[in-house]
Length: 120
Image 1 (cartoon, rainbow, N blue to C red):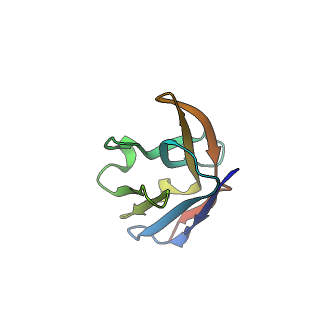
Image 2 (image 1 turned 120 degrees about the horizontal axis):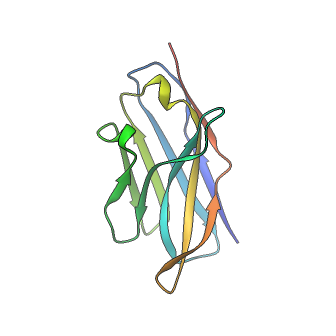
């Protein structure tokens, strides 16, 4: 069984920075992608950034140039560095891992979520 353990998040002023980390623990799995989603109150969950194994990162247009995602393939970790944060970045951030089967995404696993609040 695989678990996603998240860390980071918190309260920051506009223009500040935060770093989110996520580690996949437990059984070893073949990973199709790892990434981060977020959900603001009364809004659907949306993709922030992800990395498919062997591919370049993908970013939501709203975070391009401000957020950077990186994966440690050996340790099955993913980190999201968030700079120049804006109030609209506020929400619960969820780590996501998609397992791989025959070259395609198979199961989708979620972390418990970590709160990011950008406010003065």
